[in-house]
Structures are given as C-alpha cells and as structure tokens.
Length: 125
Picture 1: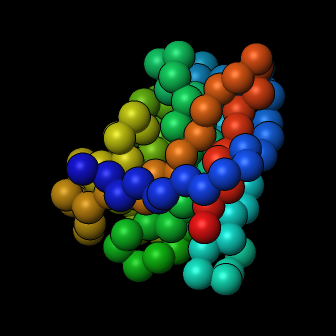
Picture 2: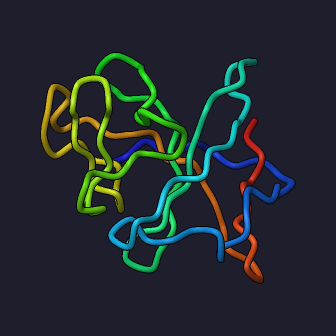
C-alpha cells in the first residue's frame, strides 16, 4: 500500500483538470512543490485512465526524481510511471513499484481533490 501524506486545512490549486491528459494519450505530469519537514519537495500530478493521481517526485530506490525532463514520467506507452535513473516501473494508479530495483515499494502519495475543473492540493503540515 502506498504511503499517504496527511492533509491539513486550506486547499491550493495545482492546475486545471483540463491541463492533464492521460499518459496513454501522450500526457505528461504537471510538477508542483510541497513543504515537507521544512524543505521544498518536488511532486507531480498525472492523469491515468480518466482519474488523477499525485505523488512525491522521489523514487524509493535512491531518492532521485522520476522525470528525465520536466513532466516526462510515463513510459513510451503511457501505461506506467518510470524512473529515468534506474528504470524502476510504477503503477500510475497506486504508485506501487512493479519492476526494477525497488519492486514492492511505493511512491508517496499526495492528497488531491478535483473541484470544478481545479486540481487541489490540501496543504500539508
């Protein structure tokens, strides 16, 4: 099961839902930052099979960011998220590593909500 960060109070707009295109249709991630443990932490949100998911942009293998270019987190078919550093492959809908050096580990999930075409981040403590 993926780690889920606990939400606090005020929602923040990450992007418009209409900006997110499913990975299998050539979509890319939209990057944003949160503050975790008093540090800015890179994250991303993606669309996959009509739903949206957000994760901390940190591979559990060695802590590197997944994207090789900003927003490039999907494999060539747009079905899985892939770490550009060591090739770990993650299910887009759960963050679970299904192949690679951290198989069985998960990306840390970031809580988001969709309200009236806005993708909202619930600010984190």
